[in-house]
Amino acid sequence: MSISISSTLSLSASSSLPHALFPPPHSSMSLLRRLRPGRLRFNIPQPPRRFATAAAAAVRQDTASWTQAPLVEVEPAAESLFHASIDVSDAPDLVASHTRAGQYLQLRVPDVEKPTFLAIASPPSLASSEGVFQFLVKNVEGSIAELLCGLKKGDVVQLNQVMGSGFDVDQIAPPQNYPTVFIFATGSAISPIRSLIESGFGAIKRSDVRLYYGARNLKRMAYQDRFKDWESSGIKVVPVLSEPENDWTGESGYVQAAFTRAKKAFDPLSTGVILCGQKQMAEEVTSILLADGVSSEKILKNF
Image (tube, rainbow, N blue to C red; front, side, top):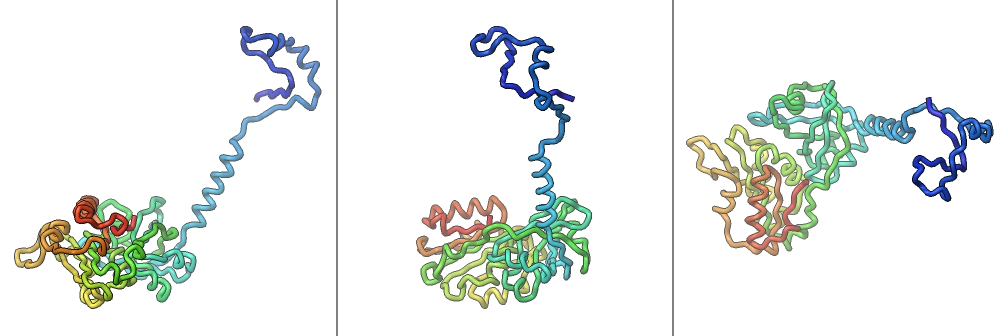
């Protein structure tokens, strides 16, 4: 317990300070006699109100920001990759927060507080029309993603609001001004690229749109069943395998090397680029294209 004394007197803690500013101290009894009863109070230490209020608000916000949603399906999409579809038909605010390809959200599985980040693979229109979000999940041992891949239809997960600005395709519009677009993706990072392609960015109106999609081998390459539809929308799909089978006749190695080998003359001022995947790939591709004269503003990323 502490005694707090409110007084107009200033008590000196050091005898070396000027007495003109700090008068000589009174005796304890003299000081207490000079105090009115209402000016003596007892303070019992308590947690600062502002911290308690902030903590309570954080709990309310955390509880309110998570939406429970059931799994529609969890199925293999390729080796070590799973396709997950989640019903968000009862969460109109969550659906409305997905406005652009390349956005992502946080997901929590039952009984685990820690979330994982996932890019949304489906276009925004799918959530509006069918009430689902789709994801391509890489099954990594010991991760939250592994737990997600082990769930079944009907299991309930928690989703946070959609985040990120996605791919700002307005930077490479209108299509006639940017007839050349190079797209690069590796592994599970094809997920937001699928959202981009199926959202539409005027590919059919452009003269040269190529997707360089890298994976270890065909067994690890997702969405092969969609390649035909992507091609019909005006995108040339170039699979690139880093460890292909002996009978593979397509591009091999890394996507940046495959692009360099196939690169032909193009006008950098009318070229757009879309990147998603490994850091090394993104950095090397960016360096190559900047050296060719492509503007950094026309190299789109979703983070």
